[in-house]
Each structure stands twice: as structure tokens, then as C-alpha cells.
Image 1 (cartoon, rainbow, N blue to C red):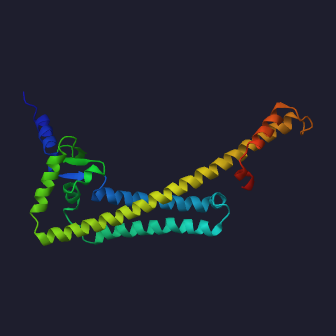
Image 2 (image 1 turned 180 degrees about the vertical axis):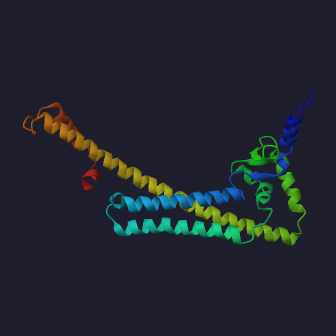
Image 3 (image 1 turned 30 degrees about the vertical axis):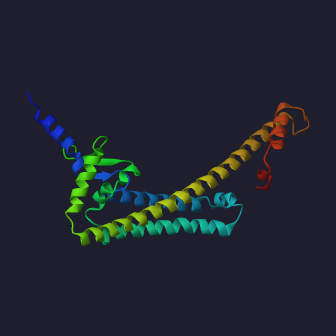
Length: 232
């Protein structure tokens, strides 16, 4: 007995390559990433305001550098918002997603996905990427030369703007992570010294008995602390 639903599912999976997108370079993904970057920038702004001293400490007390760092995130947030608005108001070619499939961008941006009409969702195309590229090329070939030139120019403008913003975010995020980890490391060191100091003071009756184990542990930690810790 033929299962009608299974037949529909099979046929849908066989034509996924007719409506492909590049996994990490399609219009919806770009809009989603811009939104996510805005959210992360706003989180960083909130973090700065809630714990400004932590950032200043991580920057060796340089308030000018701290202000500049804040403004970098604020500017990036504003530019992501502006690009998101532009994508809604300015002309974006209907062939945008197909364009990047046709030029082989899937190799560098996570492969291709095809739309399954039965599941109403996108799925990977492990064995049909060439078919998907060919289908996209067919669509582009139906355009006039002038239409194709205009569409290509606009597609690359969107691509360049997006990649530039994402690169800036990646650089700022990496710097933020380094500063945060560095500062967290110093805070953990301070907390450890405080704990050991309290144990040593208690065990040696106010350091009157210098040979207690807890006192020796405190001496060992202080002797092995990096010079940067004393500066901090």
C-alpha cells in the first residue's frame, strides 16, 4: 500500500535544491546576525555601566581608553541598527540568496541549505550542491545583462557592509573577552589571597606563630605572584 504522506515527503526532499540558500550568507541570516550583534553590544554597554570599575581596572586605570572602548561598541550597535533599517527600506535584489549560491559561496559559508516544501523548513544538501548551484544559475541567466549587473553590485554592497560589521564585532568581542578574563583572573587571585590570609591569621593567632602550615601557604602564594599583580 502506497503511503501518500511518505510520497509527498520524498518528492519534497528530492527538489530541495531548487530553492537553495547559503547557510551562513543569506538575507535572513544577515538580519538575524545584525540583531544578535546589536543585542551583544547593548549587553556590553549594560555591563560597563553596572561594573565600570572592572573595565577601568582591566585597562590599567586609563579612563580615556575606557571611554574609547565604550564608544566603539556604541558606534557598532548604531551601525548595525542602521544597516538593519536599510535592508528594509533600500532595494535588495530578489535574487540575493540565489546569487551567492550561484557564485559558490557555500564553500566558505557553511555549505548550502535547500527548502523542503513538505516540512516547511531548510535542510542541508550534502549530495546536491552542484544541482543547487545550477538551478540558481538558471534563474540568474533569465535576467538581462543590465539587471544582472545592477543586482550583482547591490548584492556585493550588502555583503561588504555585513562582513565589515561582523569583523569589527569579532575583533571587539575578542578584546573584551581578553580584558574580562584578565580582570577575572586578578579578582580570583585577590579572593584566594584573602581566604588564605584569613586562615593563616586564625591558625597562627594573629601571625604570632610564623611556622604554621597556613602561614607557609600564604608566603608561598605571595612569593609566586607575578609582578603585574603587585602593580594592579
